[in-house]
Image (tube, rainbow, N blue to C red; front, side, top):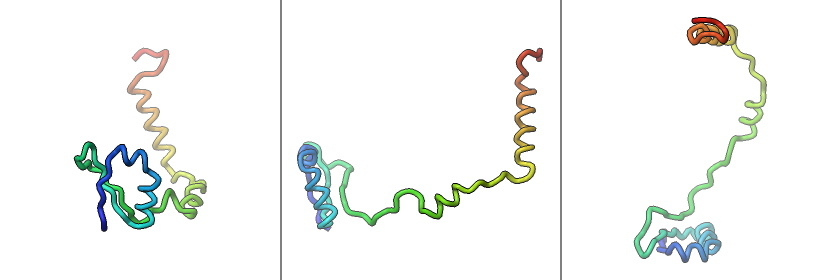
Length: 92
């Protein structure tokens, strides 16, 4: 792999050319600031799938009722926390 140093100003001016070189020829660019390399390296990497797959979206769209007892346990916890904190309009 070929690594070419390129300054920040040059990158701003020639961004589309640099990206095209990275994608088409596999050239890697190390970005420099006043001649000193930074920690930024532009290189081609394998494509990563973006977002969720169609099957994952379909699965997430299905309604799944809560298991027996889950809602009752949540309501019991809510009531007990209200009792601990005090209810509006009542003395503690």
